[in-house]
Image (cartoon, rainbow, N blue to C red; front, side):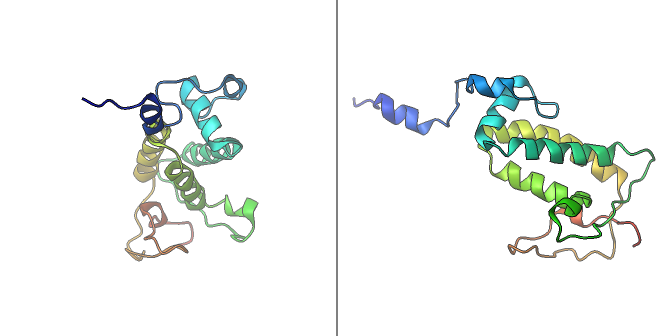
Length: 155
């Protein structure tokens, strides 16, 4: 009976299946509520974009840590400006979704656990917008996610 060659078996596995991330990734600050191993893996896979992930998770969590029972997100005053666009929590959540989709399955599930917890709180503390278009489209043609169809300040 033929057997698989060791190189073929290694090629089927992901980059860190069963192995530890490099040691230099352990010296970086841990990401929001992820284990040191999961943080190190995401730091290595994102190669320089992990601080952006940490900032976006902190912005999302800061929005949810506001006092009060109901939250109403505010739209950005200058959406074309990269820094000002992050004032809109939906833009932050879009960027988190893009980073999430770019991760391999193991790291995606670790980040997904954090995002599911934050999304449940976001959904609980914001109200749906009855006037929102149910199936709007973003620039790439994908339907707008649920976090764009929440009540904003001034609506």
